[in-house]
Image (cartoon, rainbow over the protein chains, first blue to last red):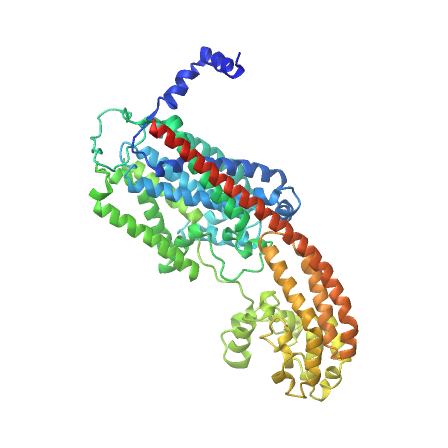
Length: 366
Length: 267
């Protein structure tokens, strides 16, 4: 008697799990020409899982108090067994997540997978990307270092540019006129409870959309055909496709291994890549470090704000750009997904990447 | 549909407000705000020099030396708020000695200190004033010392202290590297700071026999600090070894997964 088999039989008699597993694993067929970019979802799931695990472990020793936060992080790094590893995995992981999220979004844009009927998948993914940025911003403050304090001061200051309600909004975010104990409490609660709840719900919705609508066929090769938008709900089937399990899960697994290798490599050999020197000093509200700059993924916004003659104009233009990206599937309603047949889009896409990289480099070296 | 689009735009604008960052000018004291706008020796020159100094690095600002109130434009230079201004030439050692206590003591006992009333060298003769840099052994050099006397004796002193100074520099660099990767080097930094200060006050005595007699004690202290640093560096090396092995294992795992997938494709 095989206990595992018996357990599955027991569950199967009650919940029909065999059919469920078959529908979602072996019997779930993916496009035959599915490419490596489609594995980024699995990579991100693994990375977020690791963030959850390392974050939970950090919570055991971290103290969200302005007098004790920095010392508790120093203790985690130096006295708790493998504390340094857990914290660096969390810090480096958060940065790599942004890299993989950007890659995921760019691949979806390039292959036109955001187009109808996948508008909700795109919008939920875009909100997840923004939530990840808020995760980073709120997590940034928690060590209560010079960088934490001043980067948060600078970031929350930006809201003050909004006419009429700006000052109230800044005070609401900070819990006072300056970054203080109340700000740390708010950001901590948001980072460890508020955001994860919304995030997990939204990840669930995003995956539901992906599964319910079906995986989009990569718009490459001779076999690709543009399909009309059906009048009623239609799940995109791929009868000529490959099973999700084991054919694709093993590829997902391989990419997760490579992503983890990158994470571990940076964690052990170059953790300073994502930790500027100001992050090593405890917060001092009376001393602004020279050349304080945001994290690399906010550098483009930082530099863009400096280009515009006033802060409100800069913020508004960035908000409009991000908002436009969020609702792109509602504007871009053409059915064509092949990049070679969308020269205007591909040109704008490449210019957008160049603008992002250029502004980020300019911001870094300015 | 329009309402949904507007709601989306508003949401992302709000998210962006949270995540956008702007440049912020460093908050400066009223001393720098006023004097920075003036020209000459009372203005742009000392403020610009101070910005390049070791004092600026360690946040020792104008009022820490010159007194006064750095938060009040009107009372900034009031004697009621402790404003001192520029000290007389012979008072410079006492001016600097409020912080550099040990160095002042040895300097005053030295030949340099005994002739300061008669125009002998004071602190800024060698260290500059507002542009004061991290002190190194290079401050003892032919050009600087030959302004007042021959370079024979300074050369001997430099020779005596050079090994210890080189060790100090190496240990400082090692501690900085360990600190950069997250080690708590506070105790080590304090130890080295103390040893360095005591050693440097020693050669302000410009007494070659005294320097010879006491340098061995400093070398012993530095050897202890080095032993602790070596331990930490060994720990770091072991971590990297484990990290390297983990990276290789993960890459191997990825390659094996891809090979297994190829067998599915062949079927």
